[in-house]
Every structure is written in C-alpha cells, then in structure tokens.
Length: 212
Image 1 (cartoon, helix red, strand yellow):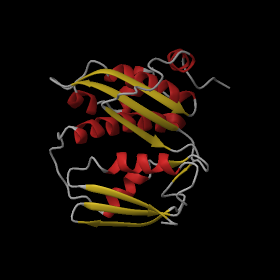
Image 2 (cartoon, helix red, strand yellow; image 1 turned 135 degrees about the horizontal axis):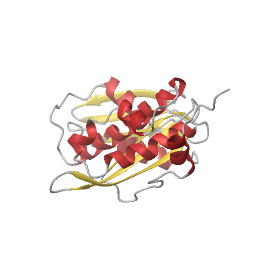
Image 3 (cartoon, one colour; image 1 turned 90 degrees about the vertical axis):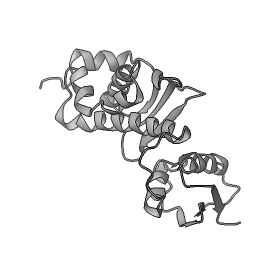
C-alpha cells in the first residue's frame, strides 16, 4: 500500500511553520470541532496603513493534513494584503503542499476557512466590512458554533446549550443552559461576546446563564 502523504506534506507536519498564538492578534478565528475531528485556530497581525498581513500563526487539533495545511496557509498569507489573502483557495494550499489525498482535502478547506474568518474578524473590528447585512438569529447561531464547551469538546450549539437568542434594537440576548458557576462560564461568556460584539449593527451582547 502506497503511503498517502508526500515529502512536502510530511515536512510541514513534522516541522510546521508558524505554530502558536499571537496574543495581541488583530484578527483571529477558530473553526472545526475536536468532537467531529479536526479543528484549527488562526491568528493574524495586520499593518494598519496598508492592511498587509505581517504575521500569521495557527494552532491545530487534528491529523497530519490539518497541521500541514495550517502551516502552509499561514506561510501563503504572510506579506499579502487582506484582499489578496481572501483569494487563497483550498486548491492553492493543496498545490503548495504538492497535493493531498482526496480523503483529506477537507483539511485544506478548513484551514482556508480559518484564515478567512480571521480576516473577517479584523475587518469587523476596524469597520472595514463593505457589505453590511442585518444581523439575524441564524447568523448569531452560526457564529456560536465556534464557541466550545471544553468539558464536552462540542460547540454550545451542537451541544444544545443555547436555549434562546433574541435581537432587539441592536441588543443581542443569549441564554445558555449552564450555571453561572460552571468551571468554563467566564471563558464561554468572553468567547460569545468576542464572536458577536464586532458585528456592525450590534450595540450590546447580553449572555445569561440558566440560573440567572
């Protein structure tokens, strides 16, 4: 049986570039789920005057392809403007690695998604979103799928912890089915606010726990 990974994939797996976290990142994201398989977090540092990505790092929970694509995606992004980096495709990542097994193609898709989400996070923080769509319950729910409950490894939506989402006059109110003394309550609160409060038409995010 032929080994599925080429030398370039193995090199980026064994000696990945740009591993780690940028503490003062200008944009960041987390996509995927450890419960479902692969997960990747992407962090970018952007030069404000020309919106060039001057640094990019990633953290990975996943297979060799996931780690290798995180490595190559961050390399491809560095030195590009955010508009140029948005155009990096999963095929670009796969080609830069000399190809991936078909069964692992989703790993490059996940890495690209992580990069684009980090860019979106930067744009929202800096008022650069051109297409300003009204925030909906569906959009909030989609973003909450990137907020993890570390005890279960599931996001709070798939873990059925989100009991209600209401939007009124720019105020987003969310109720989660966890006690406020839960060991990760503060982490979940911070992540929820981080994912939602940068939306252009959101004035305030209110997170309530089941015993409040």
